[in-house]
Length: 609
Figure 1 (cartoon, helix red, strand yellow):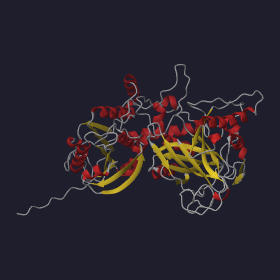
Figure 2 (cartoon, rainbow, N blue to C red):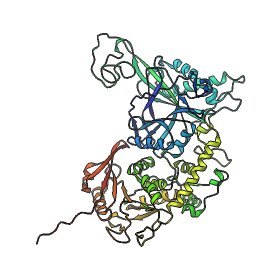
Figure 3 (tube, rainbow, N blue to C red):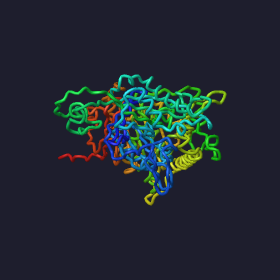
């Protein structure tokens, strides 16, 4: 991953540029727009409403203190490019403040420790959530390993970060990220990470008489750090002589006309020097990207009685499918493979939120008219699975806790999702706060599942003579192997009570047609979603798939809206429908379009006699 911090003229980080590639080869890009939010100097005292907090008492850089006396921290969350506004909406709903989408794949926000914990528990579109703890002043950049060592040692209050040993030392890990050419002495990522680690370790050892030091844990460290180095050029008349954005100096005014290459006049040939600006973050979570829910791993076990103390265990009838039985079934068959064209869980959730599925569910809770989602080409079932999780009000973090399969026979090895790094930090929160958030999430899940699978209440006009639930999710897949993967995901997530899977060609999938008492579509309350093949990962029989989709939507979709994901505009033309809205997203190095269509019955043209 690559995160590029930008600083303001006072030398404090504003927000972050990011460009990351995950294990599956997907890219996240973020172009930052500089904001007016500046982080106060770490050593500065801040007094608000009578509260005084010394910089040396906490590891993070203080930006404010709330009315309740809690520290307001600055965070940054990454997401798939194009979903930044959706992620921002999620964070606002959670209570975050100063929420600012930065570029296309990141959101900066502020809040107390509770907001940070809620973000890793509830955000459906976030991939990583981090807190900025140190930023090198712009006026004194880092030129070599010695500068980096001194900056790290002086900027971070080590006892708050790692402890002084009297209460136990915390483990750490350091990952080094580069965003541009840096000084030659800092260009080796491993040794640069060692420099940061050594500075922190030496600071701890100096506090102790026995010379003890923190250990490094690359798998599940208590304090996972990310050191971000961004190179820039400094020197003489070449600084700030360019025109255009950033041309006054600073990070943008370098070379010929600044960052964007506008022209400028240069009369002095002064040799430039490469320096680096350094920002250090700590991740609130471990165990990989937050987009991994865990229902694809083939191992799910939701046991509130063991994990959350006094809560009652979920009965089998509450979940539809028994999670214990799902676990046994999955362990017998091993880990579920992932379809080669499988959609990321976070992308599926973001597309569903963009389509308004969450708002339709909320409307169904209020008026009792129901909510229907139909996916005629579901693949491995990511869209309907995420739709069910939204409808049941199930926090993604609960699934990550339930799916973890680590540990050993002797009981060693903690669940990194149940005990994330943030709750281990000495200056962040109490364990009780995290437990309360988990308990509340489980209560919401039980209530949401019970409501979703309950039958619709009769209306004044009377209901159709078919049995409906508050939430109906129907999906179909033609490929038997993909259909099996979808079945595993649905079963593992415990949502089989509201998701129905059909196997076959969608053109032959009968949902009641345009009219009739047995029609699955409820006009004005139904959303069709689909991710048909568009020629990159799946290349067989593509045109026929789109023709089948067109005929299915024409036959079954009257009075509904459809959202189709496409990476090929020529294939989209096969639908012969006029789009009404477009969202651009980027994943797997492909620019995709999430297209909205409103489906109406075609008027019959009278035949002249």
